[in-house]
Length: 211
Image (spheres, rainbow, N blue to C red):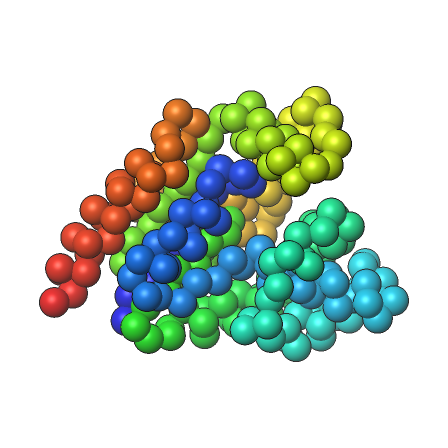
């Protein structure tokens, strides 16, 4: 069993890279951000408050990791609600335990998020920190929205990216930062294929070590 931890800020490309790696090696994949969104959606669906930590923890303990639907959970309102409960220590503890249990699946797992290499899976065989400049990440998000036929405001998206970075990096519990032994992949001027090949070489080396 091998665990691959992939961290990084929003829209850096870690989700696409994680799914590609999981498919390449036949590993299980978990976007840990969706676990917070699923908890938030459960609270919204039940009409429960987003500022009651005990209630949010109860919902977090009931999240089923095998039933996370990205298309539903990517809604903006759910993301806003998730950002409010993600700072609650009790919610983070509940979801981290679920994520750790997931990471032990055979034959291997790929987990992506904000604190995988530092908190969730500090003993992961391979740790990647995928990043890109705020300008590039905002442009990617803008292009994605426009590509789906919706209207987007680049300035507003750029402002949102910066605010989210500040929130993720500045929180007291599990702040976003690269693990000391993480390999940095800056995708600002790197194609997803180049990033995948760089990651693959690191993973292949780790797999050889385990033989």
